[in-house]
Amino acid sequence: MKTKIAVTGALGYSGKHVANILFNNGLQVKTLTNSTQKPNPFGDKLEIVPLDFQNPDKLSESLKDCTILINTYWVRFNHKKFNHHEAVENTRILFEAAKKAGIKKIVHVSITNPDKNSKLEYFKGKGELEDYLINLGISYSIVRPAVLFGDNDILINNIAWTIRKLPIMGTFGPGLYKIQPIHVEDFANILVEEAENPENNIVNAIGPETFTYRGLIKTIMKIIGIKKPVICAPPWIGYLVGKKISKKQNDVTITFPEIRGLMKNLLYVDTPATGKTKLTDWAKESKNTLGMEYASELSRRK
Ligand SMILES: NC(=O)c1ccc[n+]([C@@H]2O[C@H](COP(=O)([O-])OP(=O)(O)OC[C@H]3O[C@@H](n4cnc5c(N)ncnc54)[C@H](OP(=O)(O)O)[C@@H]3O)[C@@H](O)[C@H]2O)c1
Image 1 (cartoon, rainbow, N blue to C red):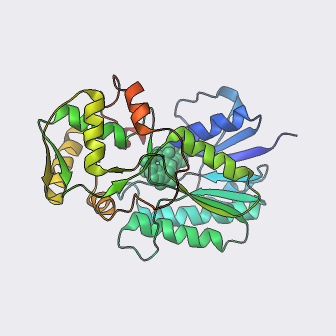
Image 2: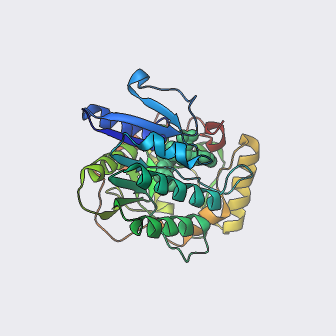
């Protein structure tokens, strides 16, 4: 019998890439998802079950025929319909359900610089979950990406969109804090490698290029052929501009905690690259589509 791997959100962004690699490796994949109606590029091959945190027994039951769980589940910001606190509680329920179901290993997606004592809820929640998983009593790998890029990504695409739309571009403060984007396919490969790794492991998922935020904006501008002034704006001005865009797009473009995390250099780690695709190469190939359309986080949740 083929090994079956459970992946949360295999109809979502990174999960889709993970499922694709697993299928190419000849494995069976079951996804636990909050969006069972999302377009399914895998057809009948992909088994789809709800990610039902309200029903831990059912959750555990649906994991019983799987050997490994690859968990991408998280929420990006606090919102009236979802929040970090709830995401932490839900993930604990998922971990316990996996343990009860006899899952041999959990590969869990975290973030660079998680910290259970952080004032930033995203980094705090991720830190708490890392601790919880490490003490759960089953084998684990924790993968910590900084920021993902690739076709259909949100964050890098929307930086390019903003560059295209606004008369001038700005950084939050001087913009010298760093960021290490990783291609979504490289990231998915790391998750699959970790699923095969018999050892416990914690790995940063960062690409081969490190940019300052200012450098990233200038690099994207050059690649998409747009020349505009890049000013240093007080972070709250940048936030207000983001808020205006959010209102117009009916989305949450950027939150103040995200700006704080960026400015605190939390999307940077001093470790070797684990991804191989350069953002600059990918952006050159995608320059005609990059940032042409706004990518909406909230519309993907509908
Ligand atoms: N994207 C980035 O740049 C980035 C950067 C750093 C870390 N990460 C981490 O990488 C992981 C995967 O990110 P991704 O961009 O590939 O995420 P994604 O596909 O948008 O979502 C991954 C999973 O989380 C669920 N989810 C997301 N937002 C939710 C919400 N508001 N309410 C309920 N469920 C929600 C999705 O639900 P469905 O089942 O409905 O699809 C899916 O199961 C996450 O743990 C994230 O923290 C991502």
